[in-house]
Length: 437
Length: 180
Image 1 (cartoon, each protein chain N blue to C red):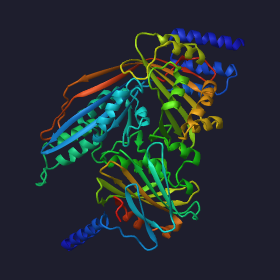
Image 2: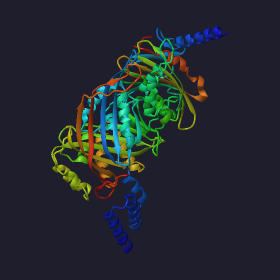
Image 3: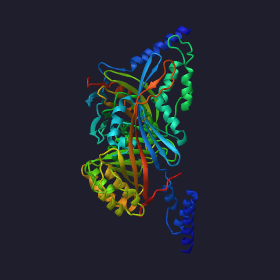
Image 4: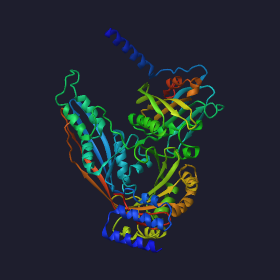
């Protein structure tokens, strides 16, 4: 006990002196171990996930003229900056989907935030959307390059190939080199002009088709998981990093199930039609790994909610949220997002999660009381506070694209800035989240 | 000699183009029947029975197989997804990515085909392992219709029983509009 007291005093001194967070984190593990806690390293890992510090979504609508060829290109670029110095860009490059999707995002701003996962869960067809991860210090350049091109490497690659020689005559185009320069800016190798995404959205029908022979042992899902997958509206596969091979399935829980779950996450006093985004994470073998739930509500005025969260348990947070006037519908302003994660390697948790996500009349809503109980005892809970703002400009972006090159168009952006982030480990109290740096 | 080579190449390409055009009356082999439903038609072995379901995500599935065939029997599967736009490339890419990155399979061939009445179509050949080990050979036809419905018709057999299902006949018999 004396040793614990001594180490605690050291930790307090370290905090006061602002010593590097990593050292403090190691000492916290030591405290955990001396106190007889289990899985101390795992807890540290959970705390040190990178936090989202900012996200913005841009819609670009450009017309590009290259020689006598007119190429129209619409795209949506979602940027998310994380506290560990990385930025993630989700590029949705589809003329057909642009209008519908961006309109959807605008309508949902404040309800779902600006999450591509939320779009996928709500049935937004993100097939082909790709996620790229770059250092934040290079993110502005990346964003400007993609926005200026009105798309990504495909457009520039095609353009460059078209302009390397003059059509029909076959002579070298003296201005074709400008395109190659643009490729260099984007870091695209002309001889192998592909950039591998770190994550990728696939159409849910392709996922279903790949698992269609499940009865013959084809595919990766067992019968229970396959039944749950049939309710998923979107799918993402992770290509790189520690989670390579994992698959995320997205669901939008609405109606009775969504309302009950929202009440469990954010309290019963939410105004408007509430819904929850559920993500079922499958490991590389198709086994359920984690259930993630996220519900967002907006509020107006300075309620000071985020200043009162620290040190409270889940029940106290519920009381706090019940006093606030939350809405599931409004757009700009302040927003609170409640999240929960459940480890599905526990068979009881797995069973509850699959009941929740398997579309069968009555089953989903019936699973919610059990789910709330497990979340309170065994779940990782998070509360994130955001400010949401919008900006619309008619600015023009130009880029040299060979003969007659140039691109122009309006831009709209929505921005979401985190103002507070709290986490509650299973059985603990809410504490300010320690983010990876 | 060069002219002869060019002529031969052209003939091969022309033959290939003709083989990838799915139009007119479908050729239904002996001991095969025609399935009609979901706005399409295609041939299947006489003994196969169809099971249809609509998922909560709006995707319809039709599975045809021999009810006495056992777990590792050949199967035909049709997926119909509504409101998929007018660009087939992200959908075809989805099939490639799902096959290779999720199901540990490989796409050995992919080519454009002409399907009468379709906005665009691709034909892909896939090898995909089963959980118990045996490899399945799958031919899939991806068709995007003008009403934005996206069809995937697959004919799959275990590698060891390649003759159990005429995959080419199934795929080539596909028609939009339930015509025969």
